[in-house]
Picture 1: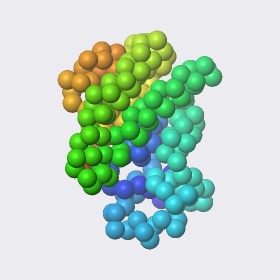
Picture 2 (picture 1 turned 120 degrees about the horizontal axis):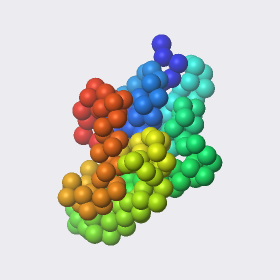
Picture 3 (picture 1 turned 180 degrees about the vertical axis):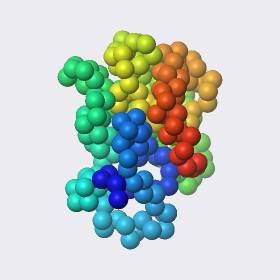
Picture 4 (picture 1 turned 90 degrees about the vertical axis):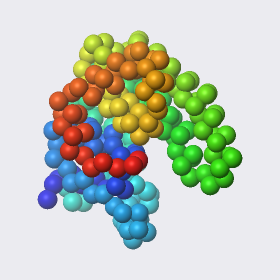
Length: 204
């Protein structure tokens, strides 16, 4: 049994950044993927009654995806070389989180007219604003294609995970040259390529 067990639905969603951190760090983990039908039963075991959550050493449990990702990033040298770099990483992680949080309500909206309005607002205003913020941050914080500093950090993995989930058209992302270069850089990392090649194909 692995020391680390990550529990989430069978999708990338909010757990993918954690999986990427663990993969890049070379940490073995049990990747538990729940069917939606089993969530009601599992909910009583989850901290705060939410997914994802992590179990470490069979006893320590913690929820909240970004908190978990930050913990494993710190533990494995993926949080920058200084506290200032850590601040820059947090900045980018939170911008990317806002992108996902702004997109997520569309999938739950039942009214088609309202859903179309939400999608229009996201595509025309929210996404361009946040993509530009990411592009600007990468331009000023990183080098050699990385988001912060000159090596891979949680910032790169968060951007890669979130853009993969939000699934914006390639021509939209291509407008932001530093962001596009960062995504390509992260995708080219051997351990990221290995993870992407073996992870299950899912629809979210």
